[in-house]
Image (cartoon, rainbow, N blue to C red; front, side, top):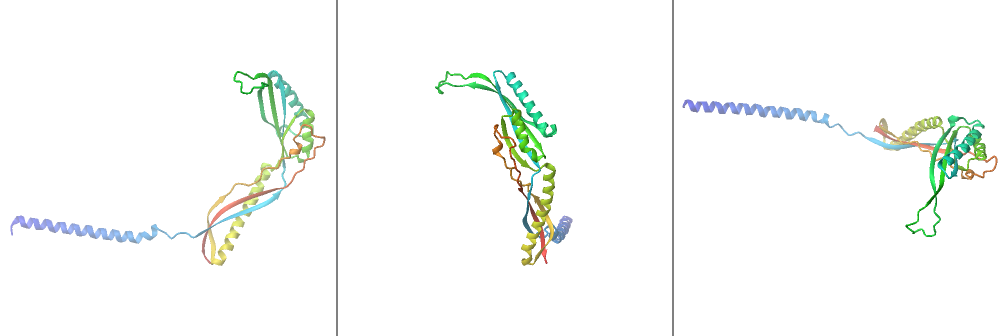
Length: 260
């Protein structure tokens, strides 16, 4: 056997040894990966999703009144001046009843032109409306917990010069709304838990944990408006009565479940 042939056999043997080692390493790696696979894919959780709700009927504790003064004059300045005098008288009359400045705010204030468009030919493209003056509208908003003064406030405002009553309604004050919401939220969660338990019991399952809680918005219908009072010709001692309101909140809860 020549020297060249011996060298070729030696190289071939080395390649076989290296290939064998690599193959063995791959087998060990695959074996190790196969042992770790169960940890990478844990068993799926068993859950039940339930909606719980709670409702209560509650008496409102906040009065909302919105009224205003509309004035018209040939110039904007005259309309504003006339409106300011009337509104100052209205505010003074309301404050004399015990309503504080903190309970009164401006809801809106507008100045708009008034045109006289009396042409008998509306399609006449050459006709131009004539400016005849300006209208000033000033609207006040009263929010107070003095519910019994509703009728008196309306009468006093109209008597002092208000010629619009836009809104009369009752609602919950922020503090009372938060208190009611917290109380209903607790009851809604307990309702969801009770419903889930009743559904799981005949299935031989039980609640073992909570996966997710989704809190819905506080649901309270818009406060009723009292349109009977929305007249500038209101009679003295306008009767305004409150009424209870139904308030509801709900939650969506996903419970983890297991065998009993």
